[in-house]
Length: 150
Image 1: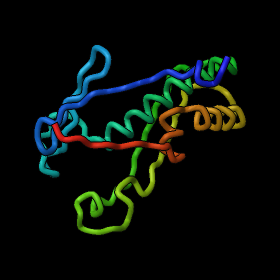
Image 2 (image 1 turned 90 degrees about the vertical axis):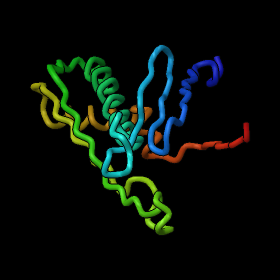
Image 3 (image 1 turned 60 degrees about the vertical axis):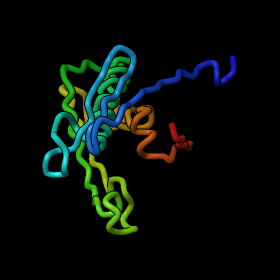
Image 4 (image 1 turned 90 degrees about the horizontal axis):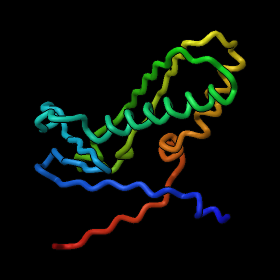
């Protein structure tokens, strides 16, 4: 079996409704991305970087549950806090630096379990290494962006 036989393709479609609002479709779901009123939006949904942080939290939950199960660790609950610092000047066209994305993202996991610190370290190392969303945040991913007139 080749490596490509194991790949799953994921995709979304989006329609830009306004300057700040987009409606995203994926499988049988739709969700709204919008900016808060303080950034010129109508606050009808989380903004793109909030979805990114939420995606990482959701992915870490799935991977942590799987890793704990593989290690025979009983997990009664998992609280995940993700926060990032973003300087919007490049995004707003006001400066070339710093980068447009987060300057730093911090993740805190609080596991309701009775295992020792050593096992918790093993779990968090595996979760960080195996989380697909985190991998895309931590390591560069090749991209190909195109635009056409319609």
